[in-house]
Image (cartoon, rainbow, N blue to C red; front, side, top):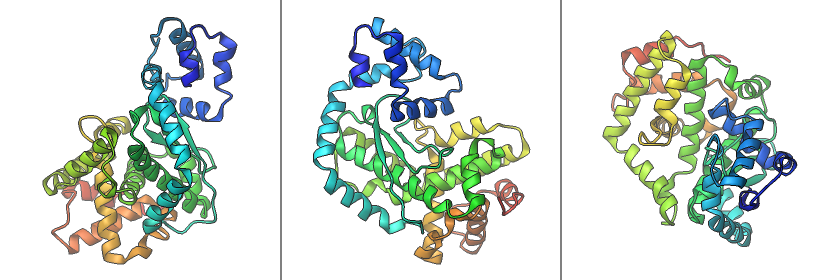
Length: 326
């Protein structure tokens, strides 16, 4: 991608050939989950337009970021490659603390440049591969390691769920699931990944790492946690009632802009409380159980321990209305 955006005049065949690269194709597919209009044809048009004018036609694929960060992307590739063995050891050691039961699994990391996501796993594909965008990191290898930790945990979730056909099918069809179940699942998956990859435990790093750490410290302040739980309850009740759609709920909770993705930290606080109450083994079967059951477990615990953050009466009622099944 870096080489492509540097070219002064790509032709259509060269632009289309980029989509034959699995990691580029995956990046385009992921961008399409955020912006349905971000098609393969639009990607080719953007690449061709950028090569001729250094301006994106649609702007979905962050080609300008790739161009601006091309030197830092190349430097990161050199740094990460030189540190690969030690990096693998650190990542595996970090993730073992909260690893669920999984079959033996090989996970492939793809470094990418462009798109809208810092990192991602494609839920509708069977392989547990993960993708991390280096152009977002501005040369900060520690921040990339933090991002890798989070995305690797998503791959562990997926591998663990693969042991049960119903769980595997749910993940593969997540975009077709009822909006309420989709929100609960995303909160579970992002929250447990946030717990496993706690940015506060990482070395200082640079600006990218500081962004992750600051988000944790801000969102996990007790007053902010309480407000996020209450807001989640209000949002979920509205989603259950059909007065808002999934995109509205998702924007409130998972966009990484000014709001700082508060539902990541709702899920994290829930997981932390349930593990403290039930022990580390709580995670072993967590991802083969319906996400609704995770929330029911928390409601039972929070009623017994009133000091825990609460969803509010309307939120609780909407959560209990969800069947504890796939």
